[in-house]
Each structure stands twice: as C-alpha cells, then as structure tokens.
Length: 182
Image 1 (cartoon, rainbow, N blue to C red):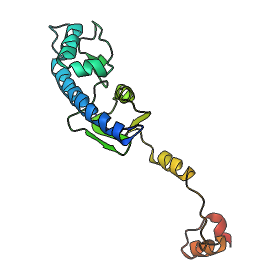
Image 2 (image 1 turned 90 degrees about the horizontal axis):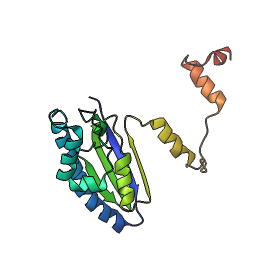
Image 3 (image 1 turned 180 degrees about the vertical axis):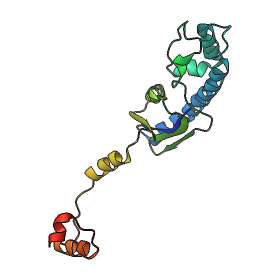
Image 4 (image 1 turned 45 degrees about the horizontal axis):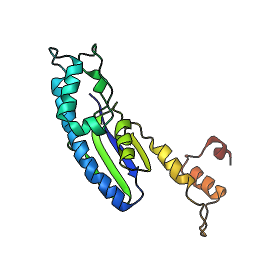
C-alpha cells in the first residue's frame, strides 16, 4: 500500500479565526483518525451489512458524522471500499496555525482525497483552502510560479559574456559542437 504526505493550507480572515479553527479541527480530525481505525477493523465483518456498519461508525463518531462529508454505502460493497481515501487521517497528523493560516499535513494512503477535509475547513470559515500530496507535487512547477513573481535583477552585476563562456567551455572541451569551430 503506497503512502504519500498530504498538505493542506487554509487561509482565514484573521489570526484569531485561524486559531479557533485549529482548535476545533484538532478535535474533529482526531475523531476522524479513530473513525479510520475503526473502519479498518469492521470493514471485513461480512455478517453485518455495509449499511449497518456505516450506521455503527457514524453513531460511534458523531463529530465525523456531522462535520465530515462521507460517501453513502451501497449494499453490494461488502468490504466498505466506498470509504477508501475518504477518511484518511492519522493520529500522527501535524496541525497548527501560523498567523491567519492553518496548516495540516499527514502521511496517508497515496490515492486519498482531502476534498472533504478541505470542505470542512471552508465550513470553519476559511476564505481559501488548497491541498496536495508530495506524490503529485512538481517542484519545477512550484519554482515556475515563484520565478514569475521575482522581479528581474536590478542591481549592477558583472555579466559573463558569451565569448568568455565559449573560451572556458573550449578550454574544458565541453563546449557545444558549434563552439568547437571557433
């Protein structure tokens, strides 16, 4: 089973709102991690219908039932696979507020979705919420976003001329083919 580290960033109007959201989120997400553990235990109990097991989970974890959007079970899904990726959080999660931001990270199943956790933060008053996993991150894409916001160099620096660079490349015999003819 592959795992990835997921990251969520929620922006609130104020630092106070972020701290308030963090406190409540910690309670609900801790319960969600227990929900996940219990789901793993009861999902193979074939003597009880998936619908009944789902009801048992929701009854045992009322905060999850009320605040985390989960898919509905179907009678034919005896292994309760409909919850795979929908309740992925562990008790090792890293949750904290910093200024007007709440930051959440956790190492969970790599095919998880944190759309429902994102929606939960919106319900707590977040103005913007984004999430991604390290499996899906393209660091060049992130750097591209950063480079687009960097102003061009304004201070005086000594630029290397193309001729100087060609001489050094030729001297080290690593120049491109067209440089070897000079």
